[in-house]
Each structure stands twice: as C-alpha cells, then as structure tokens.
Length: 312
Image (cartoon, rainbow, N blue to C red; front, side, top):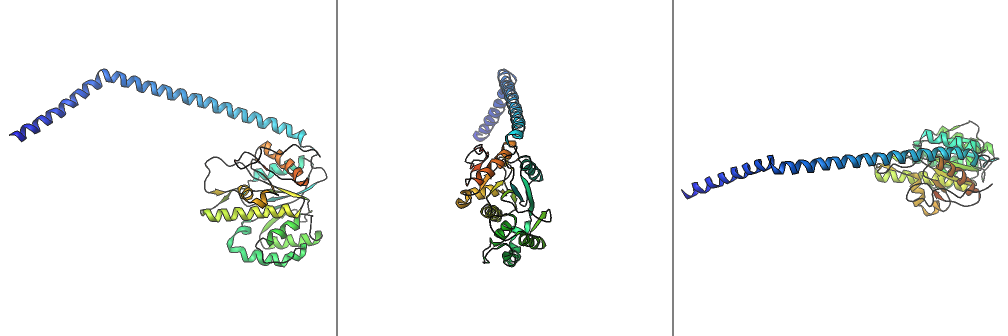
C-alpha cells in the first residue's frame, strides 16, 4: 500500500509540475519570453543591416580604388619598359584573364613580347620524369648548357631558350624550343621566338587530392621561375590573390617565398588580378634589372604592398 501511495504521489507531482509550467508559460513568463525573443531578433536584424552597409561601403571603396589605380597606371607605367623584350611564361593552371591583363600591361608599358610560352602539365608529372630528363640532355647543347643528371636541367634548357643572358644564338634556341614542344612539354607563339632579357612567369593554383604531391609540383614550378630569373636580367612571378579559407590547392608564389634562395633573387607578386598588382609587375621588372628583388601583394608573407616606384 505504501508503494502504491508513493507512485500515486509521484504521478500527481509530475502532472502538477506540468500544469504549473503550462500556466506560467501561458501567463507571466510568456510575455517575458516573447519580449526577449522579439528583442533578440530585432538586434540580429540590425546587426545584419549594419554589416551589409559596411560590406557595401567596402566594396564601393575597393571598386573606386581599382578604378583610380587603373586610370593612374596609364600614365604611371607608360614607356617604363621601352626598348625591353619580355617573355611571358604561363604555368599550368594560370588564369587566362590574368595572362591577358599581364600581357596588355607589359605592352602598355612599352615592352615587346618576345614569346608566350605555355608550360604543360607534363612538366611536373612524375610519370614524365624520364621524358623530361632525356629531352633536356639531348637539347642542352643547343643552348650551351652543360649536360648533367639534375632534375632541373630541363628548366635551364627552357630558360636559356627564351632569355639572352647566356646560351647560343637564336637558331639553337628555337631548335631547343621545338624539341620541348615536340615532347609536349610546352606550347608557344609565335613559332619563331625572339629571345628576351626579362621574363614574367604567370602562375595559378596547383590542384590535386594529395597534399604532398601538390606541394612538390608547386616547388618544381617555383624552381622553373627561378631558372628564368637566373638565365636573364631577371624575372617576376605573378599570381592572383587567394580567397581566405581556400583549401585543396598549393601556391607557386608561396613555394618561391618559402625557398630562401629563390626569395632572395626572384620578385613575386600575389595580387596580379588587381591594378595595383599589375603595376607591381612592371616595377618589379625594373627592380630586377637593378639587381634587386621583393615579395609584393596582400598575402601575409609579402614584404610590402608594392615595389618602390623606380625611375628609368
């Protein structure tokens, strides 16, 4: 009987608690809770509106800044690269728009484009290592490069084929380039290349499912940019800004900046899609001609936003 009464009291207590909760919820607490939720929703809407306004203002500011820089570049960059021949080296994954804008900027600055070399995926394909080595050893003599077993020999052959600091005459350079094209390592235009004194290397994100493989390819492409720098009067490696939170890619510019030897000689630009970045490419080339280098752009590993505005 005691057990039955115990259970009966427990059940009654539960229902009483529920009844009290219902009464309170429908009465005094309902109003307080409703007011609190209404206030929170109102505050969240106000915060959202404020953030939207701030974002719109920032976007308008960015647009105005870029429009001003674009207009300023016309006079700022004019004739800076007169009497200069530049080769444009396009790495796998480079954005076509960035290639075009960079080429247009170089031309507007007075440069002559000696060639546009498109490096193919096979350049960093591990399965093509034997092909690259064989071609490099067979073609090295065409551009006056000593034959060795270095994996970077093919980089030197290409660099000496398009730049004039060292190597043989134009006939040998074009023969070497034709060999690389036949091996499907590069494509280029025009068919007869004018060797340049400077190079702009246009990079894109290195993709792939394997993190280590991505890093290896980015490092290999950074070394190719370094070979361009060594073979001529200098080179600038340029890419577009990376969106915050981007994953699954590796950056050739980051790989170059992480390499002490490369970063001490090669100029890099990480905001090439912006008018400011395009100006950095031109002034970076002038900096290279003066025997200096720098790391420019918006990324955390950049040394400055842009180069000093050198005179020529």
